[in-house]
Length: 388
Ligand code: SF4
Image 1 (cartoon, rainbow, N blue to C red):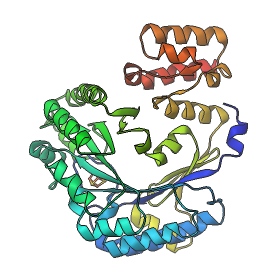
Image 2 (image 1 turned 135 degrees about the vertical axis):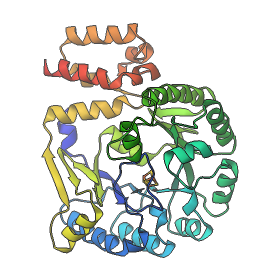
Image 3 (image 1 turned 90 degrees about the horizontal axis):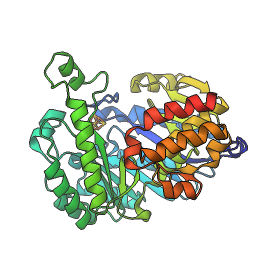
C-alpha cells in the first residue's frame, strides 16, 4: 500500500452518535443517557458540529450515513425525522442510510418515518432470545418471536434488516441460537452480527465480576460459544464477510462499515465519536453534556487528536482488512517486510491453516476463521516484522 493512495482519499462515510437509550444495559460501557426527552439540546449541538465539519472537510463524496448509539430510535419520530433532515442537508444522494435500534422502539409511526426519510438499513439490537440471558444482560425488553418481529417491520419498512446478538453469558444456549439463526435465514433476514460477551470497564457486569458473582471462565466460555456459533452460521449458509458480521448475500453487507474497514477516511459526529481524515485521527469528548456545552460555547468537541505516522496508518489498515473475508493484497506486506522474514511468517501461517493457501497463490492474504481467533497476536508479529 503506497502512501500516495492516502493523499487523495475522500471521506465516504459519516457516523453520528445518538447517546440516548430506554435503559442502561449491564454489559454496556457506552456513555448513554436514559432521558431521551432531553435530546433537543443534543440535536442542536450536532447541527453546530456539522457546520464546523462542513467548513473544513469536503462532504461531496460521502456515500453512507450511519446513526448509531445509544438507540437513535428512542427519539420521538418527529425529532428523529428532523435529525435525518439536518444530516442529509448538503450531503450528496446516499447509497446507504443505517440506523441502529432496539425492538421495543420500533412501533409503526417510527418505522413509517424511517421509510419516508429514506433509511435503507435497520440494525436491530435483538441481543438475545432467552429470558434468562436477557435478565443477565440487564435488559427489560426483548422480542422472543424473531419471525414475527421481521414480519411486523416489513409491514412498514422496505429496507434491509440486520440483527445483533450477544453470544455467551448466563442463559445463552448454543442450540437455541443455532435454531434461531436458521429460522432468521429462512424468514429473509438480510444481515446478522454476532459478538462474544466481553466484560468492559465501567459496567455492572464487571463490578459483579470483581465481587466474585460471575464464574471466572465467563469470557473464555463466551469466546468458545462464539466459535461454535460462527461455525454454525457459516454451515447454514450465512456469509461471514467480517469476523463478527454475516450477510445473506453480497448485496446485503453493511457498506458503511466496509468502507471504514477497507481504510477509507471516515467522519464521526456526536459525543464520543471517532473520525480519521487522511492521517489525522480524533475523538470527541464522551459525555453528551460536555459535548453540548462545548459546542454551545463555540469550542471544539474534540478531546484527543493525533497525527498517525505512515507506519501506524499502515498497521491499522492491515488490521481492519485482515478482518475481512477477502483479506488484502500480499503486495502490501512485500513493500514493508523483507522477503526472507515474510516467507517464514507466511509458511508458518499456512502450516497452522491460519491463512488460505489458495488465496496466497493469488497473491492475497486471507485469514481463515481459525486465523481470526489469533488475529491480535498475529498483528503484533506483523508489526514487529515491519519495524524490523
Ligand atoms: S447496549 Fe445498546 S441499548 Fe443497552 S445501554 Fe448500550 S447502547 Fe443502550
